[in-house]
Length: 317
Image 1 (cartoon, one colour):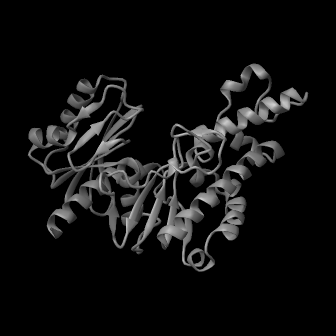
Image 2 (tube, rainbow, N blue to C red; image 1 turned 180 degrees about the vertical axis):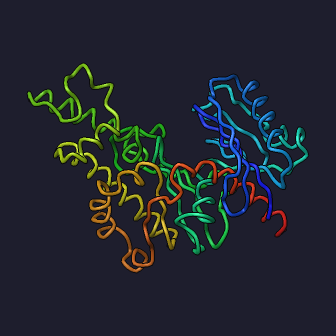
Image 3 (cartoon, rainbow, N blue to C red; image 1 turned 90 degrees about the vertical axis):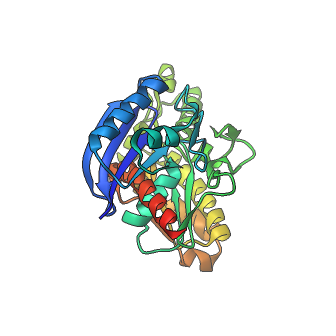
């Protein structure tokens, strides 16, 4: 059994875990990421040292990054992390082989090896959280693309105009992300106030900026029609986006994290409606769409899975 260390670098928190190839977490250190990059890396190195020996280290981090060169390249949620050679820093300090993947690819590996994608050869993981990105498992291996940028599905244009995501109006991320749901809700709430009615998820016009996707979901789960309609719109666009992926890549499974895992009941009906209208029937029939199975442990297991995948690829080559 291989001993693995995983480093999950997020905008607000960093976690270092020790585990094994079965996805079991044996030890964990977690701290707030309110530090400079230099201080954060120092703390990561100290934490990794405390974990002791390991066969490999895996790092999961939001992009953009260069997995082949081991560089973190100015992620928007990590200000100051500009061209950080994170892989060489850890390898030089520990002597342990170290591997890096963006968080969508890392989560795809985790769900494929240990979660809802187990047993299949072709799977797409959709983040559907703060943003919308994809990790692609094709023919039994992670597909990262020529420059490591494969899977940026959030940039796909779904409409000529609409909520902004990934810097583009009407994008997949604009409609299907926490920020996108918030934008849709603010626009609909403002329209309701202009007509003299009060939306279920916002008490007055001065509170528009405080609307969140969770607040809308809470109202939808209470049966509020205006909130339900927002999630139906989001779900329909989610289905349209997934139809493109099904037609293009013909996967066995699509596994969706975060918001879908929490709000499947609000999204599934309109998503399915769009899929039946837009996806090739034979390809759709061959594809199961599932919520992520690893829950709160996904980030930790994702980082371990990067280490596991890196070792397997090195041995295979």
